[in-house]
Length: 89
Image (cartoon, rainbow, N blue to C red; front, side, top):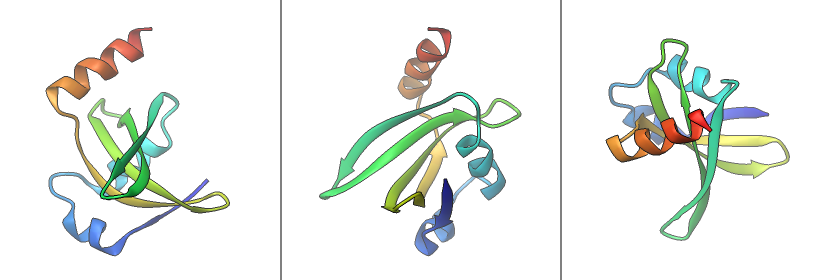
């Protein structure tokens, strides 16, 4: 699976490093969920960096095996609780 950055998403990153996003996208344990906003369909991928930081990365399918990273941020407390329950199952 290949990933490319949406330029605006890269510019909008706050308190998340690009290498952390890469670690989440390549993590052994990650939770993909379908999402939609303003008519745009995408996936949120929840996972942890190698240091254990819990992040949500949003990607959209471009075609074939290419995906575009459209955002990344830390999990909210509710998202973290759901993710930790999923990790434990």
